[in-house]
Length: 370
Image 1: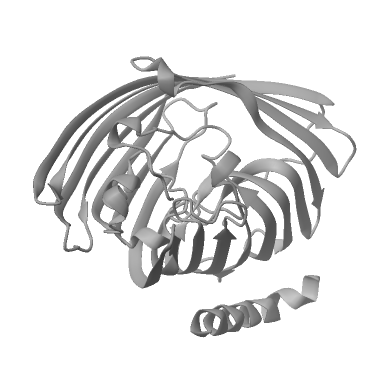
Image 2 (image 1 turned 180 degrees about the vertical axis):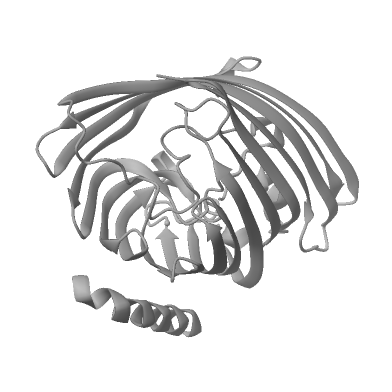
């Protein structure tokens, strides 16, 4: 009730300025860690409400583009679990292909689709071969944005959720002052979860960043699966020095259910700093991101990082994580992006059975876009 009271209060406050114009669990072994990287689809900004904005007046009726990415990642995990030392080294080279198509139906509506293929070059058992990655209708009006179908959903800066979602998403307002509602599902097969997201964003005087989000997902069909229920409150306060230079403090409060075990309220936060932005068409453009995490496990639905937060939930210990993350993107030439990324993370909490967890990851990728 307290979480709902807080979020309702935040929405009411932000809606008062909008009324004028009207978004981890995993039970995989450590060796099954999957690595992602930013692409043209999700790189534009760390602001979820701006992520998909683009020029509505593109002249082409049918447009094709895509990315080819090679990623090499290396990680070291260690800790104490059930009285034993756990140590593991992971090396994972991957090749990913994404092909996008957009059909511009009229002035306001687009039909978007995408195919994706992922190959883990040293372990083909983890391959995720050609599949439908995106397929949705997109309506763009002066004060309204509509997405219906299968699309990417990155909530705020992606610390809570950055994944594929199936459903309906409505955004009312402008890029600097808006509210968003989503209803649908995430995940697949036995790990599919249904739920909703409410989000309100306001940039005051082009300087002060405020955002409030409430996320709730539940696995109604398979209630004994990993993290079958999660409820997350995400409150953000920040300062924008320039459109591509800003920092935010993100307060997180979360609870849920992990199989048959209830997880009580957990609190934490993430500091985010962003400097610059890159453009595939501009050689020499770059972006630097620095993050400090003190993030509870219950707040992680699908994390945006190219690390493995699930390591801190080994054997359902719900340790959470604390530590640093650094990512640098640089356009080497038109259509060629270099990304370097690293993390040094430790457990936020301890349990009677687990302590001294540490995860160190270094990775790099090169992406070709057309």
